Image (cartoon, rainbow, N blue to C red; front, top):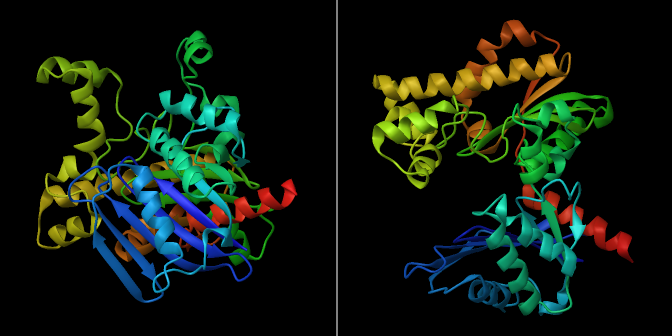
Length: 379
């Protein structure tokens, strides 16, 4: 049984085809800069890579090219579209409605479009990707795996903001949390590594990449997470500011003569590691600059570490202890300097009782596994 996993961004599509009997990835790839004259596709099969600059007008034309490559005699892994049993889609926002992954029908598709109001940059491309795969893979079962679903187990005291309750009732303003598939995957893998039941563990999962979030996972359920109504809240990130005093928004708008769109862009795309350092949003660059004495690069690293440490400490308090801290994603998996510093600065807190693990996140694999379970249960 082969399952295709699709992750659509506003101008990109990541994809991966899995053989579920062996759980091996057969081919994978990415379409970039959709709608641009510089759009291209990079496709991997084993150790070989196919790369082509092709103009993709929209997600529909990009999916058409992906479908052709999957069954290509040289670059494909299947003989025809009929060899694909199901397609799993990453969808960022499912509101309060979707607490788990689901098979897509007309109602689900309509709700994904409806929740675009909560994720205007993420849900519309997911919606378009689903429509495109429905067109190019007619009759194939489709599933939606939501980033927000894992965090729907948070208690009300964790997800409510201190705003008038009517705003929650009218506009669904609350903490939702994101990176749910990553947090869920590494929590499951941590349980295997620790050789204990996930239902008996208290874990702090740290997804540290260009986007960053931390979750408190108590007995297999997310009980708190650092991202909020949007992915802007929480940790310092590559270009996102993370937690700030809300009054700063109006203050900056007044002082810098910015409108709401400009200040939103400032907080989402010009802040974080990039904003503090003035150099880069890439932790690798900052570590190199810090080595040669760049003080602002070092400051950006210090603030990043401090925020991570602060959230870890708060989640140990939330869960009244922890069994393990898991680091994952680009920074979490690959930056040993960051890991060593976190171990050192948390040594008095975690002692020998709390283990620190580094686990490679595989969100696409989790989406494929969820899809397999859904279509099996449907039969």
